Amino acid sequence: MMEYSEWQKQLKNKSLPKWNELPQINLYMDQLIEYVNEILSYLKIDLITPSMVNNYVKHKVILAPVKKRYQTMQIADILLISLLKSLFSLEEIRSAINRVTQQIFPKKAYDMFIDILNNLLHGKKVVVSNNSLISELMIITGNMIVDKIKTQQILASLPEHKMEVQ
Image: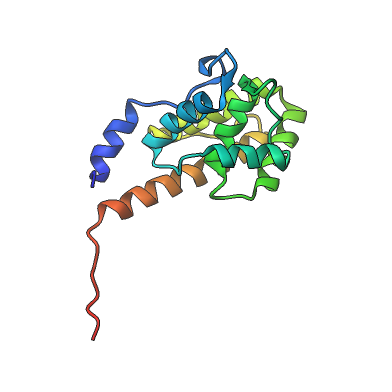
């Protein structure tokens, strides 16, 4: 099992992709799964499966693919859902994305959130700008995600205590 300090060092060399770093070509399901899971794996977040993505489409959490291909917007949504699903229901995630993107263009909102997450993952302090509720929401949510990831990694680094059954 990787030690926590070693994992933190490796994490400093990684960053979540901003919008312009996401694939600009449409991806088929297998390409989408491979791309997203590569990102999630170094964060130690549960990987996604084709059935999960199909379920997101079925429940209208993401838009359906066009000719079986997923576009940048859908890739961004799937990454966000993957980061948030252990903390919020799919309905809450979709509602939050919709509310934020009513105020801020999706690309800008995505990049703001990814910047916050990358800074938090790299141990940098993030402060609310302009007394913005959206900024505060993103920072609080980012802290929740990062705290959960770090907590799970610390627990995985600790030796297991085996209880004796009498």
